[in-house]
Amino acid sequence: MIRKVYSSFEEFHEQNKELNTEVLFSSSTAILNTPITIGNKKIHNRLVCQAMEGCDGTADGSPDTLTKRRYERVSHGGAGLIWFEATAVMEEARANPRQLYINDSNLDNFKRQVEEIKEIGIKSNGYEPIVVMQATHSGRYSKPEGVPAPLIAYNNPIFEKDNPIPTDRIVTDEYLDRVGEALVNGSVLAEKAGFDGVDIKCCHRYLNSELLSAYNRDGRYGGSLENRTKLLRESVQGAIKCCSSDFIVSTRVNIYDGFPHPYGFGVKDDGSLEFDEIEPAWLIQELYNYGMRLINITMGNPYFNPHVNRPFAKGAYEIDEHPLEGVKRVLDGTAKVKKKVPDMQIISSALSYLGVAAPNVASAFIENGMFDFAGFGRTIFAYPDFANDILKNGGMDKNKICICCSKCTEIMRAPGGTPGCVIRDNDVYTPIYNELCVRNKK
Image (cartoon, rainbow, N blue to C red; front, side, top):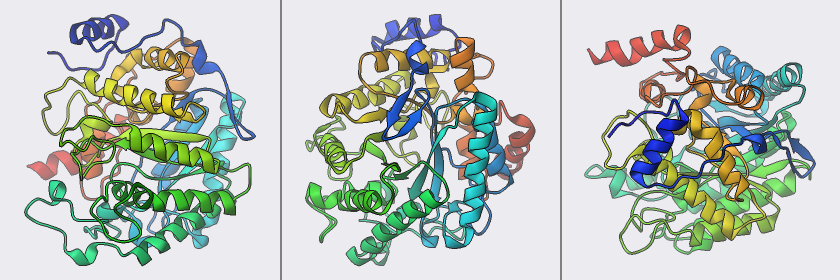
């Protein structure tokens, strides 16, 4: 069966019929050009640049040359909402030595970065994009000095197999209290830097996300649903309390991990991998009750089962399911939680594989009230002006779309790698790919 990104509507329709996936499609994308207001922040269209980390900051955690280049490109691109990449709130929480890290000493550098994004957006498109900073603790994927230094919620045999992480790397409840304080402080710093909002990151099995499945952990952060969601919920409440009323407090949250109970969140407890929206919907309703009005939905673990959260045409392993089936799982799962919490404004994920059909699929889901914004991740590396082509030129250019080849991920996994699109941005990233991913294999 052919597995490639769709370069025509006909290809999409043919495979959608062949697989009997019944992914919705709309002939009109006009709804993507309609605004939504969150609090008093106007988001001018329904297109979102998802948080795509470049691993290219300075040693002190400030944006560097490639970081600034990436945001200059997406700022020109016309998306109404830019989800600014993972930014650590503690030194030991960095996933690599060049991950962004906001703190008092480099706050002015972040201020300049946000100002540049806003200024370029106004000059290019006539409006400021709304910019939300993703505040993170990398947890088991922490590597602040370039070597693994995991900080875990619990031992997980699915990941660790016969080489368990030493138990002294399991964080204490007291440490998690400090993480919560750091996430709130990071939110305050984000507002000072000029961001429109903050994302208390809770996805892809980083620390906050891992706690969601800490069924067998003892203490205040494990066991019950209330305990497992404690760090996220209290960090959100703290950020809402400490930031101004017009500052957006959000989260990018895994509603499904793709691992069996008790090691996965959003799965049935019968040993299967079947999605169960009960706990994710409860959490999203609680966050809405606290005052959250915008949430970013995703699934899976990019380190272990990336086909779950970013269906790919080519990756590090073969999978039994077709990528379109993976797209359907994310979109349908998002629709299920939207039905449970209809007043929450929801951003989707997993659209890049759809290629030129992505705007039309997203439009159909939005028209049917299944989510509210179309989020694009890998696409922004390959095609930073995707939004303007959709909104002004009637659709995506088949010669500019992300082909989901996973080369950006290969670069990211290489020591010292600074990911970008090898195919569409080849002058910058093909030399990096050749040096880190081709020559090092020989």
